[in-house]
Image 1 (tube, helix red, strand yellow):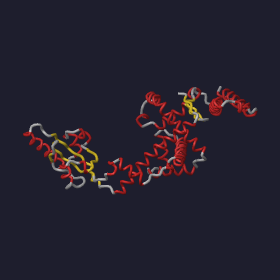
Image 2: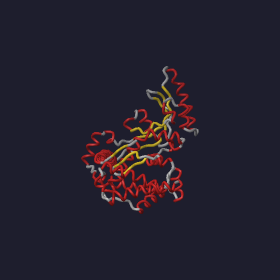
Image 3: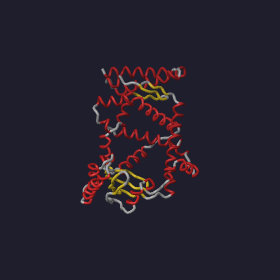
Image 4: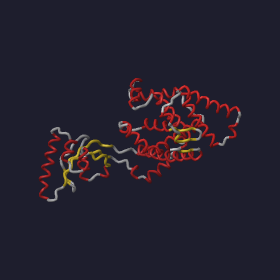
Length: 351
């Protein structure tokens, strides 16, 4: 049965090919009809060459046409599988397909954008050699200290075939080349641009000293005569810290603020944003040190200095601003370039 279908499809394909090429009647076909012929031929080749007659292939369908290339349903889902998060990959097949189904339109748009960029790169004469692919893979293995076997095993765990991975890597490198040529290389951020950016973004220009702090907090009692009880509780907790108890665990147990649930981490706070009581205590603390309990108008605090962050030099602030501005300009121009590719392309979505 499989051979019979294969012979029939082969005959259909080659008869069609012979008719249109030898009779030179391709010139009479409209551009739109030509695209459908290409789609038909592509599907016939797939079936004829592989001889596969399973329902999964027979019922595969074209979900988009991008210029003269097609994107099939199976290709879309294969890419969604490869890019799925670990949480999605752990779902049952039925649940995973449900997630993929809801994400079809968004992911198809992303896949169309990828296809357009690859087409643009090839039209511009860009290509990726096998040496470039191998060099990239060796770089990844070196970065993560992996042997070739470990690298292949890690791909397998992610549900990626080694050859498929190389194909995807080749496409990524190809896209990076065309994007660099068409967008990145044309961005120039001047000193005047940086001055203007810093003037509009004051938080960027304040390279002041900062602190990363954790704390255990006790609310100020409503009745003034209850203050002594709060101090006794705080002193008891402070003594346990001095005796070697874990600060984070004590914060989770005793701190009376939302951050206590996560160990009391307040994050990084700039020096000019810190309350004066905190500034006075921090001025005599070393990194890793824990303060005795002290009062503010809010309540009683025990703080730990997790990290002291030095003020940034002016040159460092400007370099950070340059990177930020460069990134913003890149995204703006990249999106505009991508939009131009879509505007001049023939795109038909068949979801």
